[in-house]
Length: 66
Ligand SMILES: [Zn+2]
Image (cartoon, rainbow, N blue to C red; front, side):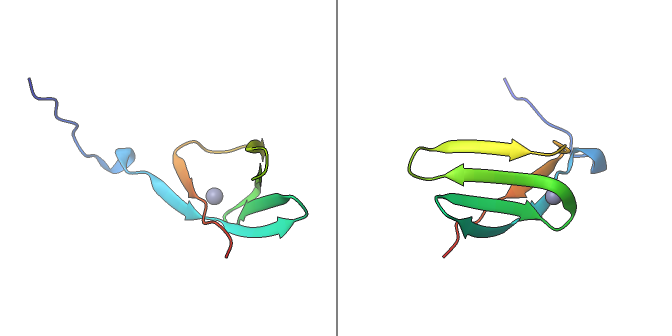
């Protein structure tokens, strides 16, 4: 059995690259294209908080700060 997913323009996900910075124990990701978007990660506990309305068609790429 073969399943074929047709590739249409609307199926293509947009990818946003997020800016990241450290704030105490948190790593905070923000997106230049989504002013309300904020994602916080606490590496010591694995806790994740996401603020703001997010368009789920947009794939946010989170690079670990170096
Ligand atoms: Zn975005």
